[in-house]
Image (cartoon, rainbow, N blue to C red):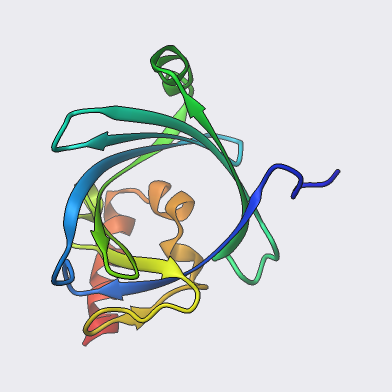
Length: 165
């Protein structure tokens, strides 16, 4: 089966940063639901300025296991009824606020991951200010972050802070 027929290659660099980079603007509230037992992600993206929400169904397949940053990514846009139907599936949830930044975006995580900020952008990207690259550290992928319990999340946030010191 050709996994690349409808997918596009996504290969981004990812960095832990101490906070939102200067010039961050236009926050979007993102609620990701990683459907249990699958590679599917149901995403709702809400523009906090307008209140408008867009639904997406995503599917990511790693190009190679040793590089979690490189994936074949397929996205389908969902209407409200489709988003509601798929949001009822058993899933692990990850909430974040995404800020637009020159060269990429900064994700400010909410809930148990509060205090974790990741900057990402297409290769090659230069992270703003002090940063530590975690591109191929699978602990910092969305699916892995969504599966952390409260204690594991607190430990990862503390580890991320240590990476910056």
